[in-house]
Length: 377
Ligand SMILES: Cc1ncc(COP(=O)(O)O)c(C=O)c1O
Image (cartoon, rainbow, N blue to C red; front, side):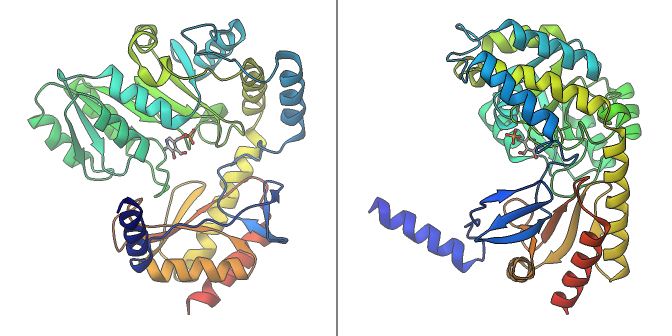
């Protein structure tokens, strides 16, 4: 009976064109991936600066694992609260301009922890409707009431602010993971001034890649910010930046932090090396930005509607089946890209999500836009 229900639901996903069955990737060098012995140009990686495969970090990480071992073997709340992790957290807080920081095993867990723990029935969470699934899950797990506002609509947010009961907390992202756009931060800052709310900003796709020294773009408005190591920082895990009081509170009450094994010390040592790479990453950031502008231009010149203000571009396709068909054909032509379909984006608004890395070549972009143009006619 139970198996039958699972099979029925999977069959329904297939019927709706929503079934997920990602290809198995054998290898890659940051710019490309190898699947079934074929090398494809990768437009689906979040390794924006190309640090994930860079020689310096590989060496730092392997030395660190060699020196510190492979596991912390315990939660931070038991014996996993290593001094080197603390040192790295302080370095991250300093670099990004916050009072304090906590490392988490993943951004998903970090969002669960922040949103389900810090806020309660006294607050009302007002969230941009396009925030990441982990943020939504975090709000669902918590006790604070939550209400969405239209994507990037400061007007709609203001309306929500006026009718909010309880102390409002605005929850948004600085560079949206699927749309690739940014909120109007100056307007958000104005609203913050007039309404006095707290702001939680997920900077997962901005840290490392955007802002002065890769410090992201939302410091002016964010009280709490989330960064993931698994994107431009080329590692894994996540960090949350915040006032010391919030850190103390999370250490005492955040179940996703208390009941999980800490990242190993070797991670913290590597994270310090990542920070140095980010600090001297202007060349990589400039290249990423110039490639992003070029791909946007190439695609719009060929008649595509493209959203995205930086290194994440969302090519608007619409139908789930058509988007799926296009990426399958792109795959056959040597390109690895993926569609974002319902429930990641609203039904009937499927996109092809392209992400760039500083390692792409100009020719990769020219050939890709030609291929997409040919296939979509
Ligand atoms: C905006 C955003 N926040 C959080 C996460 C989760 O981070 P992690 O991959 O470290 O779990 C992701 C994606 O992975 C994301 O896109």
